Length: 264
View 1 (cartoon, rainbow, N blue to C red):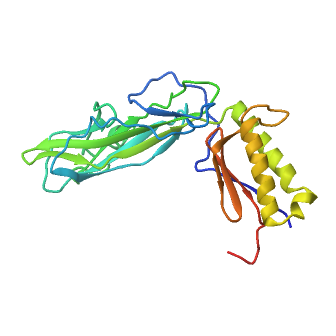
View 2: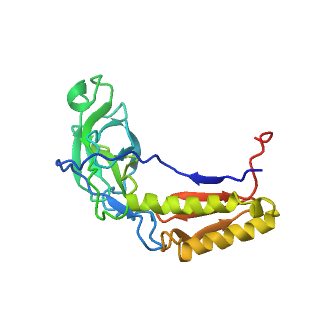
View 3: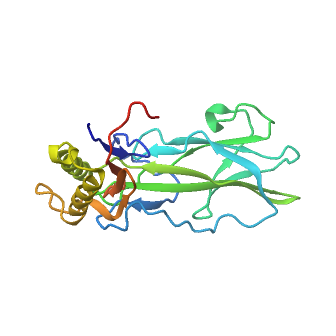
């Protein structure tokens, strides 16, 4: 019975192009897959300065045609769509960076697709084309990601109207160092689970052996890469799986039982 190593990856990291010279508008809160165990892909802390409280909050529906970008790609343009209430005729609909409170664009209902991304005039859907800042690099040694949050707003005789927030994520590709670390972990786990001793062991014995290996990878790495390779605090044991997080923030796991082709 073959026991498999499973790696869970939430988003595909595409190969990044060279950093572009244009600096688009926007202020991200970055996340860094650093060398310490506790700072791996922590959730960013947003400063709630942009969206004031109002009775009309949520009556604008804001959407975007893209919600994620790979860092440094030339295609970093997103079209925002803000559907306002049919009984409103706003003079201006603005796009706001929620983290900074800055106005970053104006949305239009002008049937000019090339300029604004709008196709029908007078349908109460306001659009804009906006370039997201994908130049997020702060540390060449680790992959990073950033999250931007935007909302649309306008003011009329009824007061201030505010949309739902829309998140845009930017991801860097894994660094060569991170890929080498993950490969070292995978090789060590494969060597264990493919061994005759492991496959002849009971589930409890496999669990003990896998835990010992993962703790060693967290504490000292491998002979080839003598550094911490996984986040020790992330090691979690269930009945038939031990999950963990690589230093890059990617989730991995060791299956203690093989797949059963008759089970869904």
